[in-house]
Length: 218
Image (cartoon, rainbow, N blue to C red; front, top):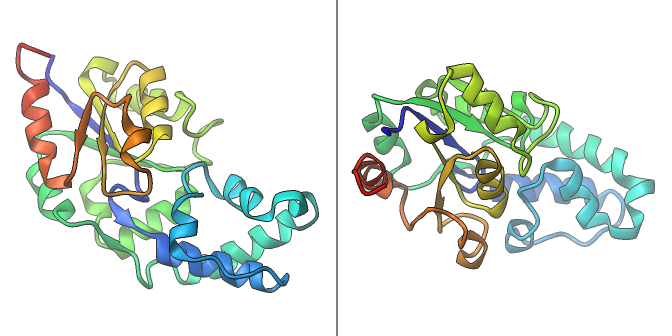
């Protein structure tokens, strides 16, 4: 069955946002005396949304400081969303090629921030729908946002493909019965991507995956 709908993760798949997220985190954490995080530290923590990210960093201090750190993070991050964030190689030209598909973004970043980031990086025009962590009642790895997008476009699970860089993307899609293509250049190592149907090292390899899904062997 041919693919009609492509669903993309945002951070670590379409756009490398880790420097700006790290800077915003450090702005919020430093105000409470926490040591600054390196970008590589942040990469290991992102993927489950802001609340989980902050809780992981704060540890046993999470109940006392979480709300203030989140507020300071969001205040700073909203104003510095794309200071350093850029799309990954081959993202733009590949999206321009994929004209025959409906395309949605499913992010664990809030919808307003996801939309703004895509706009600032001039990628918003390629997508028909943007779903954030607050668009639906649950976020990835729940299947809820994936099912929401399927229903929006009246597309079956077998007619969709999820493209992401983490086990959260793969899990959410699998729960909804959607096949997955995992990218290796993002924020999770290859060992986290073992359950994906396809693994690609470059966004530019996506058309080849779509050719395979259209073959009679799939």
